[in-house]
Length: 75
Image (cartoon, rainbow, N blue to C red; front, top):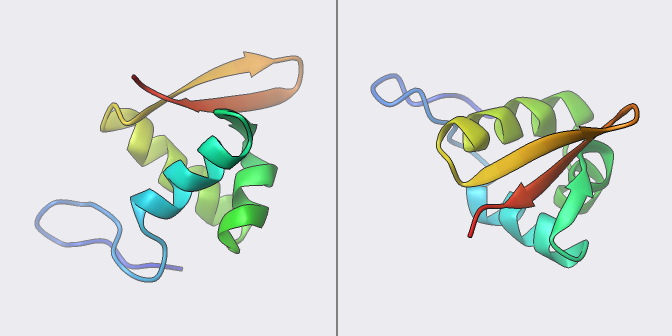
């Protein structure tokens, strides 16, 4: 699992925010956590935690549809 930068609290390591944004865009701009994790090549839990941080940073937004949490890039 990627480490966090001690000063900013942001993730460091092998998975960049761009990797996650690209994965969402590759799924027509909206994707579930599992699909994003598969495209990025990381564990579901790793993707979920990173996506939550990206949402706090206002890079993406989420909405619940049925039992699925969908993520999309903020314009």
